[in-house]
Amino acid sequence: MNTLSAKRLLLVVTGGIAAYKAPDVVRRLRDAGAEVRVVMTPAATAFITPLTLQAVSGHDVREGLFDPAAEAAMGHIELARWCDALVVAPASADFIARLRLGQADDLASAVCLATGAPLLLAPAMNRQMWAHPATQDNLAALRERGVAVVGPGSGSQACGEVGPGRMVEAETIVTAAGALFESGRLAGRRVVITAGPTREAIDPVRFISNHSSGKMGYAVAAAAREAGASVTLVSGPTGLEPPAGVHTVRVESALDMFAAVRAALAGCDIFIATAAVADYRPAQAAAGKIKRDGETRTLELVPNPDILASVAALTPAPFTVGFAAETHDVEAYARAKLERKGIDMIAANLVGEGDVGFNSDDNELLVLWRDGEQRLERAPKTRLARTLVELVAARYAAAR
Ligand code: PMT
Image (cartoon, rainbow, N blue to C red):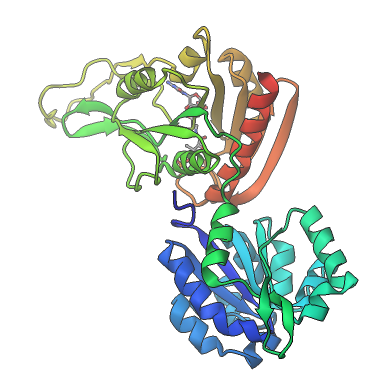
């Protein structure tokens, strides 16, 4: 599967002759479906012009930490939050040393320090600089912190020497960038996920619904797929494209969703309910459009089945993960739902204020289970979903 599809990648280009390959890296990342933005160190601009990288990426290229115009558009912290992963290609010996120290004295190093996204380095340098214990020590420390490294290759170098230190080819960098998103933690597992709102018909033209866009659930489905699971996504009405490689079943109402989930449960290991399911539906949907007659009308509502609680009550039940959308007292209400619905985990989010929760690109979650909890700080839903799926995989493994 192509894990780079719709991913937001930040390419950091540092100073080295291999910077001439950066446009090819951008082009191939974009061919793989990624959106690419570029940050250059001042030294990189000695080897290749920002204009070239702007042309191939389709976005302004950022260089300076103190550029008021650029900071007004997308500040360095926003840039750090925006990306799903960072690729440093070429990564010079100097930049690797500065990364190890946690320096933030230019835009490129500041973004690397300010992000929680995974980082891939494609080192490129003279073979002696590569072999130097300082460089090897720096790389070992960075690997220890979870930084991925691809290459370098070996061969004749721009400086006339022969040996290891050449930046690997663009295609190899693209493959390594894709691997950042493939944890394999759920390989061989079947995961069923609900997403989006439901619509409860009042008559053929009106319905009761809510503000769920489906973004959170679709991101969880994509993340579970990337973690190696076989995923069925049962989705209420949304305007979103189904995630690549995910079997998507579209439904309208809570009753439809209930039936589709039941039909998808055979062999299911993990059930994750992100959908904002309507708790009630009109007792009777009118067969024809209800006409305005000036009279006060009362809508009789009856409860919908609780899909999540019914899955958790099965024997045997899959590992069940719910979401809780709360406007206040988030933790207390979420803990109560964890117990009442008899589920294994719950991811609680605040809704109704700010730009997180419903219909936003970002979210923040408090994930609770019986004897523990973890707070997932504000991040794009795509990245948050990957962290959540890793956490679910770990709790699932612990529960078995
Ligand atoms: O779709 P987005 O715009 O990205 O927004 C994401 C979100 C805010 C919808 C999502 O993060 C979220 O919080 N989803 C759960 C919303 C909700 O309905 O919460 P609840 O507290 O009402 O329900 C608790 C749990 O029971 C949920 O897992 C829900 O899917 C499930 N449920 C609820 C009612 C019902 N009849 N059947 C259910 O399965």
